[in-house]
Image 1 (tube, rainbow, N blue to C red):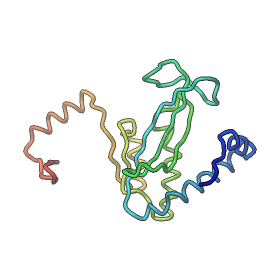
Image 2: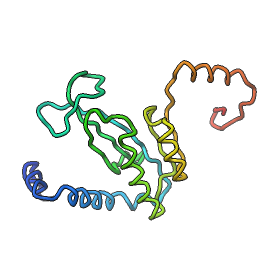
Image 3: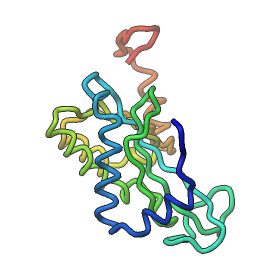
Image 4: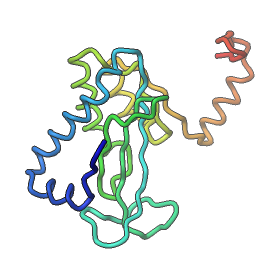
Length: 178
C-alpha cells in the first residue's frame, strides 16, 4: 500500500452516492473478499453490540444499554465467519432495535443469497438473545443447524436437574455425555 485515503475524503465521496446503490456496491465488494473462503465448511457467528453515541448521530435512540442506561446508542448486528473472526456483514440499527428479531430479515436475506451459490454455513452460533422460536424456525426452514445459548430461567434449571438424574445419557466423545 502506498496511500491511504483520509476519513474525511472517504466520507465526502460516499456522501455523493445514492444510499441504496452505495449499500449494494459495498456488499458486493465485501462478499468478494470472503466468498472464496466459503467453499470449506464454516459456522456463522451472530452477535449484537450496543454502541454508545455522543452527539447527534442519525437513528441514535435510547434503548437497552447495560453500561450507561439512558444514553442514545446504535445496535450493531454482526455476522462473522467463526474462528476466522472475518466479518461477513454488519447491520447498524437504532439503539432501541437490539433484539435479534430486528436483525433477522437481513440475516435470512443474506443466507438465502448464499444458498444460491451453495455456500451456506454448517450452522449458526449465537447467544441467548438468538435462542428464540423465530430464529430457530428461520434456520430450520433453510436446513441450517444452529447452536444458541439458553437462558437459564427457573423452568430450564428444573428441567436440567431432572435430566441429570436419568441414566439415559450416552457417550458423546471427548469426555462429554448427551
